[in-house]
Length: 109
Length: 113
Image 1 (cartoon, rainbow over the protein chains, first blue to last red):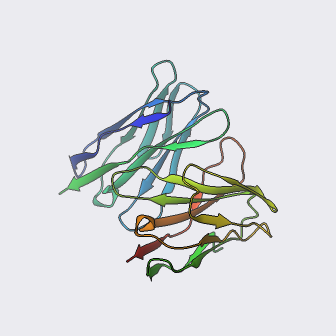
Image 2 (spheres, chains in turn orange, red):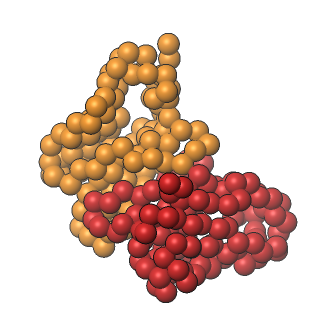
Image 3 (cartoon, each protein chain N blue to C red):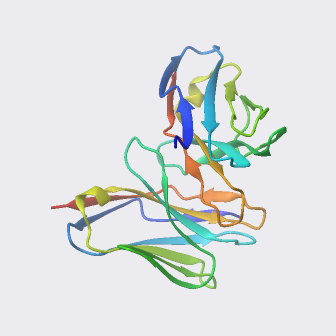
């Protein structure tokens, strides 16, 4: 079947580093996206991985291991504005997107 | 540069009423889609379109219709609203290539009483 698992909630401190994990079961896996969604707003694109390894984009990095069906989003130097939900989304061979339920991150001062 | 524009932002319907959620994009994207987002669940695909004149069903199409007469517009019609359709609806578009991210509209919060 198609499934995405990610933690429901996480809490971290301003200035710290947090890692949000995601495991997926996707037949014909064809890439993984991370989106950020602030409360009451639309999701916005953060990163895309299709090959194993780490993609770095400023304070945000995303990692993929295809053999393990595993990805993580790493947020460094956390800021209060990073409080949001983070959606892990896999894509299958027919380009269908499978959305996780999202991880709600609370950044505390 | 408007991106994806959705209207209305909020809507309250009575059971049995019909309405159309509007979606327009100005990025010349071929791919457009409608999702609903419910608490504790991932976004679920309702309908999608890979180009003008082409539409297809997603994961949860029942109770909804779509059409794609132009590249820019992709309206979603609720035929006879039910309380189970209370949700937040997002329209999204992309270029359609394998690594193209979705661009989302700001959402429509629909309540059916």
